[in-house]
Length: 253
Image (cartoon, rainbow, N blue to C red; front, top):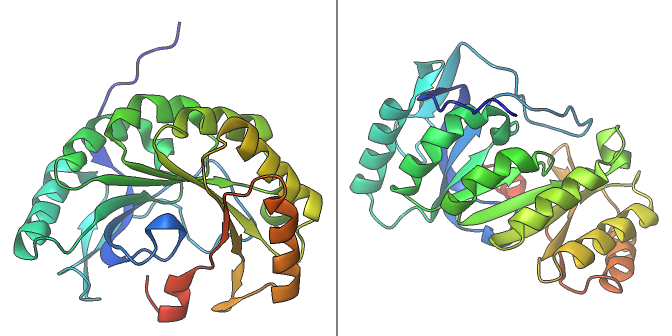
């Protein structure tokens, strides 16, 4: 029998800041981003450091671009006091809190305590690699939106964890869920077709988003090839969009 996970009130964070969501269905919404350290994967295209650090960077004020540091691990009490002050100072500015990483679900023992408390401040948006369904399940009642990735082998450098993705989506599909697939010139059409098929079979109403890889601040994928992938995937799962990382073009975090 599994040993129960004991919640704790501290977590390893890398950044806390206010910015505009540049990906997925909440694109354009102002969010508070909590970037968690640690990840269970090491994708070759990842542009985000996730190793634990001695300190966490946190904005002095929402969107100021001026940062100070807090020692890691950060306590839940410290964080909720800061976020409550932000929301009290500029009510209505922030749409939600984005839990991002790294992979937030790696720190499940902290999230069990953090997620209910954070959800009292703002609705929660989880950004995840979609490979840890057992960690997702106890948090579901407190999550408003879930943005899960499918990690294609051509982009991550490791075999696509199809079964883990399928199990994860089976849990996430009843929330406001989307599935994101990063694609590049390395991506074979059959990989995108397999992703579309999996989403259509497990979550037929879930939007699938093709996200062209960003390299050096630009879309690193020819437009014609991207349209071809969209045409192939749409024949399997028509609930499909193409959205690049727009925050990169705006020079935002």
